Image (cartoon, rainbow, N blue to C red; front, side):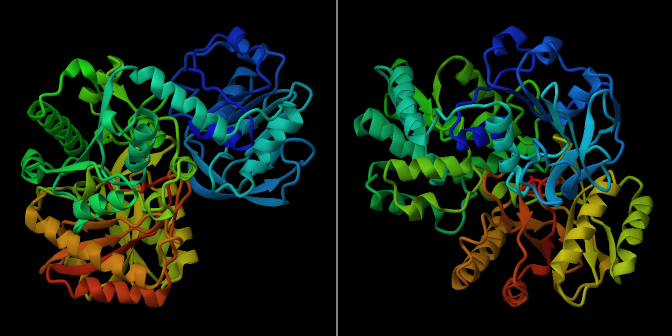
Length: 587
């Protein structure tokens, strides 16, 4: 819902977010209502909502779950798990008179759903369809009720913004009343009011979000009222902490303090392999280190608030609303932090923004482009890019899964199988923790073909949420196994070498702008002599949806050669999964 609100703001129109159980009376003066997607099912997971919303004399647009809820309310039929769709689909447009005005006859639309509308309510017509979804879009023009199974708010729905513009201006007759300049002025006022006479102790990772939060808080409150602390957690990239301090100093923020707590963090995750367990442990240590530094400086608790550069995707992926599922717990949303937030002890000036908005805000307050255009890097750092295993992972129904994989890829002259590791995904707006599949045997890289195979595999096989292609290393897949491996200094050193090698090649070919983010993942997958690396370059705008990046073949060859030259790496894979169904990071 928050991304929808952000897209409406892009149109210059103020939008407000309400909980699912809002009283219909509170919405009577709105220009229109948009009901968002969510992890529930209208068939067996009843959502608490006021049905009087559908009696309002204002236009209503239902998206994904909202589309299904509207269908259910007006007497149509929603079929559970009818045809799962994740990622790109081709929408055939049947009627361009209102909501779909200005669209092409066929459009790229972004799907993420379990259930499907199989019969529209009385008075509605089907205005768009896809191969796997008979009711991709529906409308009752007389009632001004519209439903879309796909997500127009995400960047990968080609003309999604046109759809929202049609709804906001042509159907709802809204007027422009919002801008980033106005929002910045409002934000400064909110910071001043929240902080009052207190000071802010800000955790600064050095990424885009925390850097913008640092600059904004110092501009509003003054340097003497903001203490910026960068914690080296041992999971940083090569020379990361030194680079952070140098970059911020060059931008005029020479008062950043740095503390090395790497041994504490690595000790805290010793023997852990579960991604949620690791994230919780890391988040707790961040807070413990902050408290220790706070005590060393003899700061009075009553005079300070904790500051964080949290942005909205952090909140929504951690299940930050009653209607959202926990995809992964961000280090700035562990229970101890949430408790402090509820007690009014935390200030998060960027918590309602997306990455592209944060960058725009950074530009507004005068930060250099080099600082605000850095690739995103997760707070837990390389800890969630260094996957572990106890060496005892088993795959339920591996024979059936492998048979299904082979059926899908056989016509392409390829082969494939399930891997005995797990990764986090998001399917139907719900968290999944499933096995990836690997495709191998390709003589050349045909990204379009591999992309189609990936989409079909994750749509058709319930327990697959990610697909990788083997791109480097002369290995025998009959010997592929998962060995015991944890978060150790030696494995982190290996991952740093791999990450640094990829960074150099990206910069050599000037790909920093073409690629939005580039995780390099170390897997405990061995063929007898080492470990495996997965390359995960992606394209995105706001991180809620992504496409995997179609790397130039020669550049990819250069990358695989560089990785295989590193002692300890024997195989290279390339993640060919979009989001959904896979998250950007593997954990």
